[in-house]
Image 1 (spheres, rainbow, N blue to C red):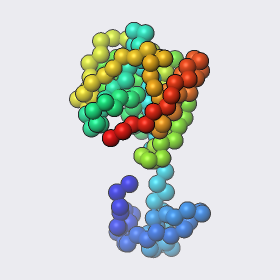
Image 2 (tube, one colour):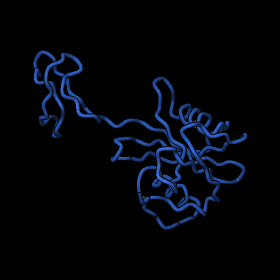
Image 3 (cartoon, rainbow, N blue to C red):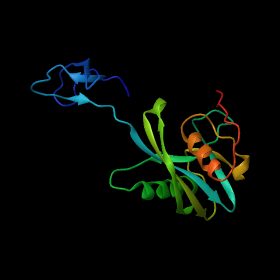
Length: 172
């Protein structure tokens, strides 16, 4: 989160103080305003996209060369996680999908996110959105899961299929 200096409710200064056993950002006017920035995780949907027998990994334009991962996106207000991930698959790959299974829920502390990950079977012709610059096709057993974020979902998904690949670290 970007550092806030002033309360978004009343405009007074913010302070850091213990509340509910954690350091929180609070309005100095606790009595009349009472603003607390809870800094709750943001829900993000992710998909292990299966297309024509392969798994599709994509590279975001902002990522270093060689980094490929799952399709992800923020869950929007008013949509279910299932609707959200099918929307993201359509927006990012131009594919129509169907949910095969919920893979699991994963914390991504570095980004303060909760990842809701699905296996999605997709059809159509891949056309990347402007935020993606490349994609790879991999067999389920060819993917080396990564140590954080959606890599944990890949590891669990593969384990259900009897695949136990080495976990790798992304290097910048």
